[in-house]
Image 1 (spheres, rainbow, N blue to C red):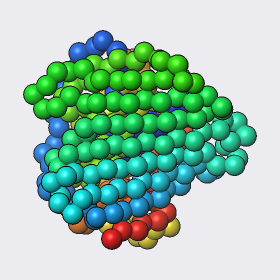
Image 2 (image 1 turned 45 degrees about the vertical axis):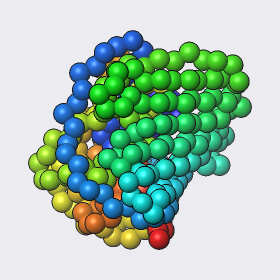
Image 3 (image 1 turned 180 degrees about the vertical axis):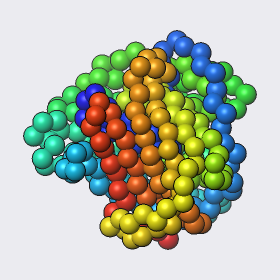
Image 4 (image 1 turned 135 degrees about the vertical axis):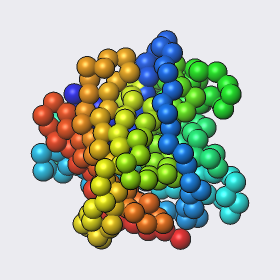
Length: 261
């Protein structure tokens, strides 16, 4: 699995949701109930991402909402490889997701530059009660790149998945399932709220809920990854850490900074 695919897959898996491939109709997940989520007017989260203990990149998430919470959230993400990893594969990816007040994905846009190749993806997700096909428009170096994904109604992108997880009812022992788009594929992640633990990161020490699970590609169930992630067990529900293992290579994302107002 390439560093780019691994990085995006780990981030997508964070919220227990992953994508489905072209033309397939997929049985929806049994999605956990949601509690009302009260996000700040603006919030910025920064993460360090490492593989085998060596930092390979960073992730930043910036979320804003209107004064009227009914307007939902706009989340912007920036994934970038560090100096060391850029010697092998240079990646600079930006994405924007819009969520409604129920934390359902409405629209998603991403621009990725990898070793000089520029790819874009725009997605409109089906409304509740609508069809099962995600409207996708993709380009590669400015040329149309056909991509169609059949997805369950509750499918979402990896960026909004992180915020949906923060709004989920994460009772101890609860089973969780999401379908998420990431890296031009649909994935399914299934897991369970397993333990309460304290997690220390550069951003502080947090009482956290650990969620254990696995992620697999819906078009190829043989492509799987073990995942674990931690969400703070407080009113902020911060994504504190994530750990995944693919092809024997451990990957980790760790919260380094939080700012909000």
